[in-house]
Length: 89
Image (cartoon, rainbow, N blue to C red):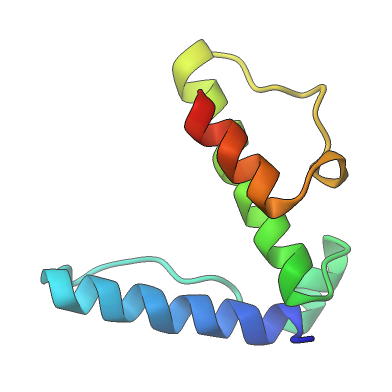
C-alpha cells in the first residue's frame, strides 16, 4: 500500500509525461506534503484516488447542473464508482 504522498508524486510524474508529450508547457501538480493530505484525512494512495475521483464528479455535476451536489460524501463510493458516476452525467 502506498501513501497519499507517494501516489500524488506518481500522478505528478504521469501528468508531466502526458503534458510534455502533447507539447503543453504549463500544468498544475498535486501537493506532495503528507501533512497537507493528513488535514483532509487522506493517508493512502487509494484514499487519494477516491478523493480525486469524487472531486471530478462534483466539478462535472456543477458544470452540467449549476449546483454542487453537497448531499454527497466522498466515503459513499469507491474511486471507480465516482468515475463511473461522473461518466454517466
